[in-house]
Length: 272
Ligand SMILES: Cc1cc2nc3c(=O)[nH]c(=O)nc-3n(C[C@H](O)[C@H](O)[C@H](O)COP(=O)(O)O)c2cc1C
Image 1 (cartoon, rainbow, N blue to C red):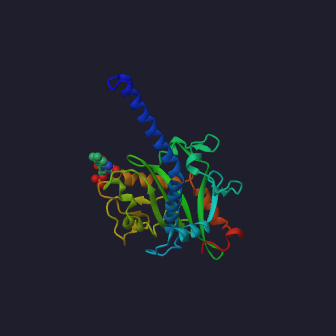
Image 2 (tube, helix red, strand yellow):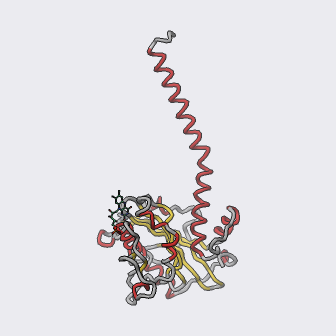
Image 3 (cartoon, rainbow, N blue to C red):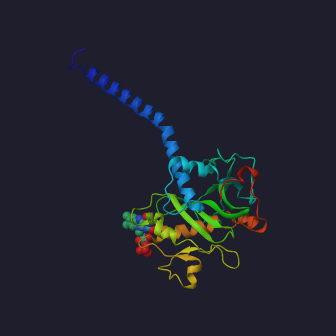
């Protein structure tokens, strides 16, 4: 075929396109297990930081981290009934996917949808941390719409199901330097010791307003606002109110407070 023949250019372009797309597809398939493993590692590290089982600054290698993570007491909570559901395999359950699955998703009533979710999964993966036979902490998944993005995090409560032990946000795309300050470790450290509920049992934990003096009565329930990020900060307040409220984990937390669970035999050596 003559070099000046326009069909030749079309064939070359088509060939390059096919070869490049095959290379990209192959890379995606080959790298997927590595990507999934990295995701699991990151999630494990994130959750382990909230358990109180890893000392601040303690560096564990990947294997140690995964071994500790696997020893955690991972349960599937039925958010609607406030109990645990042992019929679902916690190792394979995907809460994020089930929020979009009509068989597993629950519509959030508009007047209760403080986190702007629309729907949520009926079930959630929660982590229990034991000290001997006593429940020391529970780690709850939380999420809600921020200014620009869905904010995904975890909230760890002490055994009283009210005092915040730790918190983290592991996925969000708020503006760097503004909304993404919710991931600042020094700010998240201030959550520790704050109470979620007031004397009436209503969730009142809040971000701001302004700076909260540590010895003021407000410090019982509030942490400092984030400068230039009131919208994201308010979204955090709202999502905590939703997830710790009656349509979120409040029924589960009430049950755990009233009838403390016992550690299962399978996890009796893990978690504390
Ligand atoms: C481009 C742009 C991006 C912004 N991103 C965020 C954000 O991610 N989170 C947020 O709360 N506010 C963000 N803001 C600021 C809000 O519009 C608003 O001014 C701020 O939340 C008020 O906080 P302040 O009361 O501390 O000033 C952004 C503003 C601009 C112009």
